[in-house]
Length: 180
Image 1: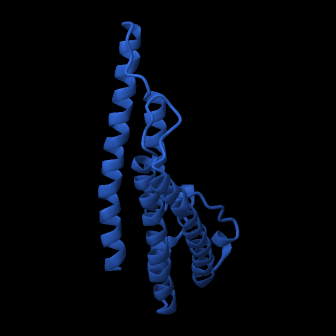
Image 2: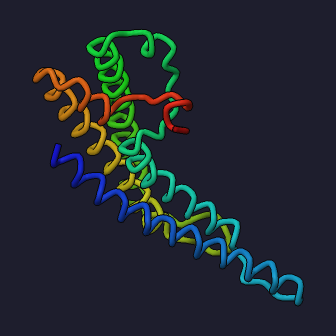
């Protein structure tokens, strides 16, 4: 479906940006390690890399979902007929969507409190937490939106009897199938 292809394209761009962010962080840490050998240091690389990992994880989840990269045990699913497989997939996506919506919902008060209190990290860098938690929350919100939209699109496909399209959108593929 066109909407899923558009979302995949957007998420590939996001994944590229997240990859650049991770590479930049790795270069920053490596440079700090070199400076430590020379008797100096940037300081705070562990804190900054933790922030980068939290942001990268939240944003990377939507990409992984649309690329069917999340781990799923498909023992029962693999033995079912096409409709049965689609129903297992739809159930899985519904549970995932509900879980991620709940996570995004619970992330907002964390960010809101940091904004309201003008909170900073209890570290030497005293990082304003809203600067880190904003992109982190946005990643979880994006994932929740992607999961819900994908679930609804897959439901429409299943109701239209387009089982192979639904499986391609939300299915779980065994390792043997992906290695071919």
